[in-house]
Length: 458
Image (cartoon, rainbow, N blue to C red):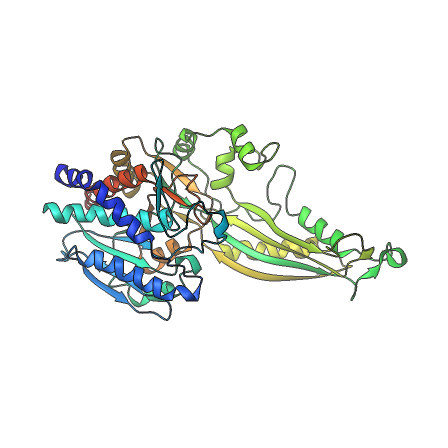
């Protein structure tokens, strides 16, 4: 591996220049006016892969093209791995909050500032540079590699979801690698082995057929806002647990190994509360704050609406009240089963004096790859070698739905090997990417393929 790693070190300056070139494409998938820029970004990354001798195709969709590139020759005796990324980026607005224009990369204090720098151009480009190091030094890869780079991740990956089952033979692999997430710090690299799923719904309570004068009619009928508040309060108990019968039945308990790994991640509760702007943190009894926000199921009220919201007072009994709710799920909870239990509980809590309606929203499966399994342990070795520090295991509290789609259609587990730091501002003004994380991420990506190949063969 010395030739590969030496090549990466010798070309560090050029790698930064190429990242800056990639970042200059305003590839905003949410805005139609940027369709030509998305095409240009897809062409750029395809050209980069083609120049390394990979069999590269731009697959047209009803939206933006999907880039698929495969190392040649494809050796059926070797394991195959798929690297996923996306060339589209979030809208940069509001422009006035950027210190410099979002598509004119600025290098300052060891970071590159630009929209898409950490999410996700820098992270998947690091993997491309790692493969380049193998190719340019004549070092044989111990595996077959497929790159899948799409242009619609920031708007829901609609066309990728239909592309996967239609091209499952082309994309067949032993495991998927995604670097589109974060690590706690450069001194605490971490592999993400689990993600939470989600169930979303909207609850509405209707009372009188119009808003009523609170003096003339108040006290003679149910106030829908009070009724809804009572219903919502009945969904949680004093210990922070969700009060839905059966809600915890399928929850996979954290093992001693998992809890020990999570405890190694540096965390200061007082500093965390200050960062959030709250007097103190709280949550489900019996678990640490990190466990609550990444490894336990939750219920949140995302929006609450009723009655008059304008300036001054309006003395009414509102005719209706509504709330938007999400429930984060953990392995092995099933969204459909949880949703059914929530619906039953809401109906139990609703008084007969109002009418209840429930509108289902989006849902997503939680994800888990065995933390002590060979794939994860191989990933930890590569990350430790790349960053020069012991790599830890962590869970993410959010959801990445495409991971479940990979498991469903490709029958492959996914390793989430992030390079982004907590203050990189993805989706926010002044997004950045640490150039040290970029460099160490390339080393990790180069070391990854021997480790994963050995794990699959064993």
